[in-house]
Length: 374
Image (tube, rainbow, N blue to C red):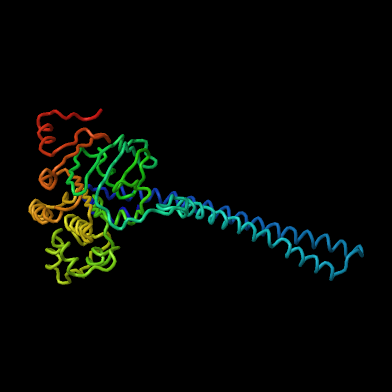
């Protein structure tokens, strides 16, 4: 909650939610304090009880020992030895009580780590994926069904579509219709619950996921930048890329325009999660990263949603020649970007309700011939 509060400070101020967030924070801290106090109280009770046992047993031993000495059944040296042995015997009980408390804390920590370690790996150790360093860009979904983990809502329901290499496809639909889910399945973030995704005619689950992602330039809707320089974020995971290649991709995406105006250029610090950049600039960085390695498949999920119309027009003009020989999947709400595509797919409630040439689908949409799923 603390991280969310700090990163979302502007939203909290705009909504005058300072008091509400403070109350929520105090409630959480109060609950944690009560829990910690309870744990410490139990620990103190155990330790004090053990100390009490030690004292009582010691006093009882001395009293019994004195009577035994008077009766001639025990010597003074024997009493001292018994007393010392008693303390040695009782002391581990106190240590054991302390260890129980520490064990419970370690057990809770281990349970959290176990939940993380039990998460399914992308590539199992006993699997040998097919290597395909270069893909042509053919994509096919066969009756794909998908829902997010711990979610009963079906995001994609019986999706079947085929995209040829070099085809330009736009995907539109209402929020929550499954557009981004389709994109995430293609790059292997999730696996479908039913059906098959084929890339170049091969089941995507049989391909090396690293090869698939290397051949797909993905500009996601949710952008995450890392603390560091602009150059670091552009080249993250790309291996060795020369400056000319980097600047070419940055120019198309609109990054070069604001980088050259900054005193540090591409060495400018973007801040944690890219906080030093505007929303449009962060999108430009994500777009540049997707173009950097000149992949045969481009997958763009709302690539200009935070940009102004002027920036969008410039990027659209620069993208047009670059995507001419690539497979393009464009998820967008902006009609202006549809000039980049030749085919249009409309999703609604996880199903395809229209698929065909762009002009035909747009005409049918304007005439009200395409109806939403219920």
